[in-house]
Length: 219
Image (tube, rainbow, N blue to C red; front, side, top):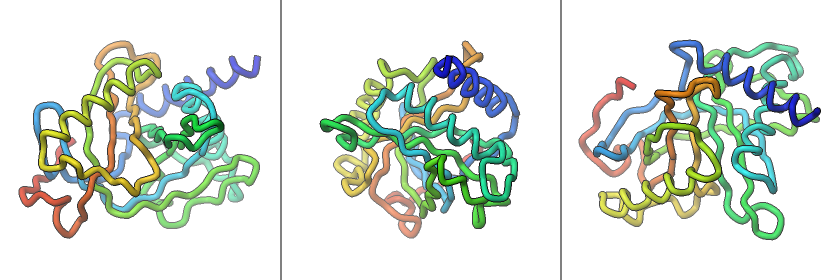
């Protein structure tokens, strides 16, 4: 019964989250683009994160957003409701779980009006504010549903693309996350779905992520 309840809350939340056209997302510019991936420079941003240990990607995303859902529905010291944003971002942290298994961090991008002073989550939700500086991120888009069975393959395809690019051997070795999966669509949307693999790469805002030809994204 509890498992069903978690699934229904997660599905309802995502349905509302991504059915609203024009949902706010973190801002970025595209600094490099090929047919199968691009490199983005993300602005500074704040996220509310839910660490989850010892389960699969799909279960981690459900469990993490069950806690975040409570936070945005008023589970904070202000009892404030917080509007939805995209994407749902689940980061895979290798060998951080029991017996060297993977752990996960599920992240919710905070809307602009509370980026600097977000409501404090209730302690029992075990959520953490994640203030991120400018980020250089390699991104590969893929369709369908993001599942345990396909996210690793998509991450491997991005790694191959990067190995043939100016960012060969330039992934961020000091990053805690191996890679992240960004999900933009409701589970009830069956076609035209958008997911992304994110991998941090070396570079900075000052040098345009190590590439000089910067174009502003219209995404």
